[in-house]
View 1 (tube, rainbow, N blue to C red):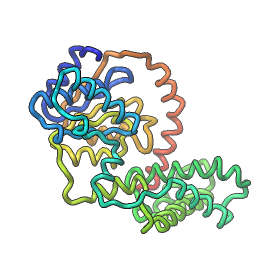
View 2: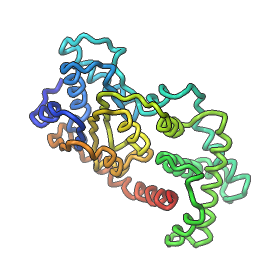
View 3: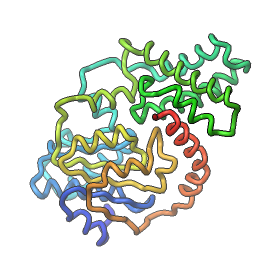
Length: 304
C-alpha cells in the first residue's frame, strides 16, 4: 500500500463534511480507503459507513483498497460488513423489488417511432447504427437529471430552439416534438413492465424514510449525475466526496461540475501530488469537450 503524504494525512484527520478535488493519479480512492479505516479505528461501526461510486469496476477497486488496508492493520471485521455499492445497486436494494427492463427497449422504441412515422429517409443500417444511439444518449442524458416528459413545456422548448442557427425554425420545432413524442411513448410502454436505471434513482429519492449513515464516502464525483448526488447527500449525516472537476466536462450520463455544488456544505481540499501522467486523460477531455457542451445545451433547452 502506498504511504500517505502530509496533505492526505491532513484530510483524513478532518471531521465533518469533506470535499476533495484532485487531478487524475493523485490517489483519490486511496484517500477514501484510508479515511474508511480511520473511521473504523475511531469507533464507527462498518454498518454506519456507506461507500458509493459510479461503476462496478470502481466499486471493486474501492473494495480491494479498503480490504487490503483492513487486513494490513489486522482490523477484526468481516468482508460482508462492507457497504460498497454503485448508486444504482444501492437504490435497487432500498426499493420494492421490481423487474429491470432491457436497455434495448428504448432503442427499439426510438427505431419503431422513426420508421412508423417516416421521420427519416435513411436506410435501416444507418438509422440503427447512427441515429438510434445518438437519440438514445440524448434521452438518457435528459432523464439522468430527473427530467420526465411531463416536466417539458413543448411551447417554451420550441421558443428556445428558435434562438439556434443550426437548423430552420420548422426543423427545430419538429425535432423537439419528435424527441418528446419518443420519450412519452417509451415511458408509457415501460409503465407496468419494469424500471430503467434512472427510474431506480428517481424512485429512491421519493422514499419517505431513507436510511441515514453516519458517513457516506463518494468516489469519482465527476461522474455522478444530479440524481446520484442527491442520493448521497440525502443518505449522509457526514460525507467525504472526491472527484476531478476537469474530468467533469465529459462526465458520463449527466456527470457535471455543477454536481459538485451539491456538496458545497463542506471543508474543501485539493490533492496536488500526482502519481501518473495526465496527458492522455487531458487529451481525451479536450476531444470530448465540444460534444459535452452540445449535450448540456440541449438539456438547458428542454429543462424549463
